[in-house]
Structures are given as C-alpha cells and as structure tokens.
Amino acid sequence: MKPALGAAIHAIAPRWGWFVALGVGELILGGVASTNLLAASLASVLVIGAAIAVAGLIQIFHAFSARGPGGVLLWLLAGVVYATAGAIILYDPIFASLTSSLTAGVFITISGIMRVWAGFHARPAAGWAGSSPPERSPSASAPWSLRHGRPLASCSLA
Image (cartoon, rainbow, N blue to C red; front, side, top):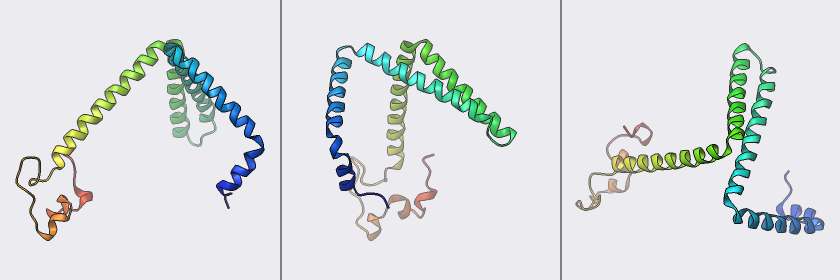
C-alpha cells in the first residue's frame, strides 16, 4: 500500500530547511541563467550531450548481456548511435543547439500542416463554415463516420 500524500508531507517536514535552500538555489541559478542565455543554452546542451554519450556507452556494455545474436547486434547498434550522437553534441554544442531548435520548429510546422489537412478531410459536408445548417435528424448527433455507415476505427485520413 502506498503512503498517503499527508504522510509523505509529514515525513519530510523535519527537513523543510533543505527544501527552502533548494528553492533559493534554483532561483539564483535561474537568475544567473537568464542573464546570459547563450551560456545557459550551451550548458544545457552539454549536459544533455554528456548524458546521451554516457547512456550510449552503458547501452554498448549492456548489449553483451543480451540474449541471442540479434539482440546483441540491435542493442550494440543502438548504443553506438547514441554514443556517436552524444559525441557530436559534445564536439559542437552550438551546432547541436541550432540543429535541435531548427528540428523542433520543422516538426511543429509539419504537425500544424497535418492537423489542418486532417481537419479539412474530417469535416462533415453540411454545417461547415458558410454552408447550409446541419440536418436535424436523430442521427445528426452521431459522429460523421457512424452516420455514413463506417465505424470510427475503420476511418482513415487518406
């Protein structure tokens, strides 16, 4: 049985000073980081790169404990990819920072385009902006796919 939240709070209550100190430390570090955003960005990229490189090395060592030749090869390949990515990030953190920002922007843009496309293809024929009002039959409240005889799971966006 998991302890209740109240019990957990009472268990840490004697150490309240450490939580205050942690909060003050985070406030100070956040203030320092906001004064120099480039240095904060590079520091975070370096920490992430080191974590990825270490995870890759651990995965390489773990690969030899996997069962079967396919498992060893798969884990070894994944570990090499991780370790290489971490090494590249550590070698050129500015490039890694710019690349990750650009990649995130591209994925968000693609996601938006796909949502607009899916929205236009999922719209019902009646009741869409500027068209006639929707029908008032009892089945009008059902989803479009069910009104047209197709279960929702069999509908595709293609």
